[in-house]
Image (cartoon, rainbow, N blue to C red; front, side, top):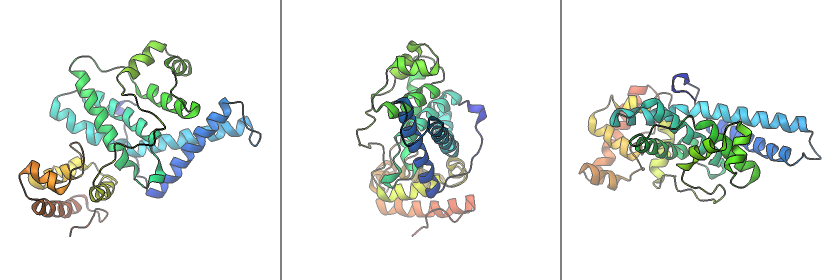
Length: 278
């Protein structure tokens, strides 16, 4: 996805996330059946339709959450001087990865799950920019890699991905070389916030209809820093005690600043959907 083509999309409700996630799963399963030669209970045309429905659901899911990428890439570009479109590109690629690893049955909202993936992708891109140019558009390659892995239920080779995309295999190899090897079906999730309270509040804050970092800029500095740490926008989600150590405050003071900041944030964004203080 090109940085300049991003448009605002309506935020998904929890129910819509589940519905779209199920359509994506059905599409992937239909794709696997199609590649295996079909199924007695469905025609090839029906399988093709299910695959197309899954792809449409994935596109809507991504467009509804692309603002999360800007929320991470924009302040990181300002802070490091890195090229913002390149950071956005890598963050969007990480968003694609998160989508195809997301399991709605765990009860976690997608934004909560995806943000650590996006932050990691953007951070890796910043590191690479110090030594080499950012790679050519990796989004399409990574998305096809995950789709093929889901269909084959194994890690596809670079040649298999390249054949589907019509690009040289060495281009796929270069694009995936920087990726940490992740087992698709390991069942482990090392990217979810460890603090349940912050996780619940984070889900509600990032689901609001405007970029959070713009709102935080309108808050007093200390309150903004507390929210930034508590909700993990600067890295991992932190507890009250951890945030207090960083800011040289006690945990109760951090809690009060968080509540006050959330109250101000509600006034700034004119919404009652943020968590209540107290």
